[in-house]
Amino acid sequence: QKFLLCKVALGRTELVSKQKSKSTITLKRNIEYDSVKIFDMDTRDDGDDDDELVIFDSHLALPLFIITLE
Image (cartoon, rainbow, N blue to C red):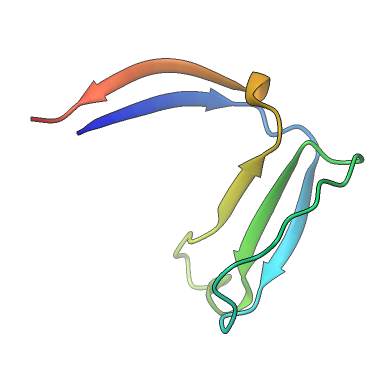
């Protein structure tokens, strides 16, 4: 297994809540934002970070390391 560890610049982030009953969210890029943070309203305050971050441009991610597990 290999993992790519990156440093990511989120820029201006739009917050989007995810309903627990929905399994997918269709994202349309809002030109005012560089990224989107999708969070679950039900688990927001319990300390469990299940949030998803989406960046729209690959130049915002800088690959640093390839981690190989054997």
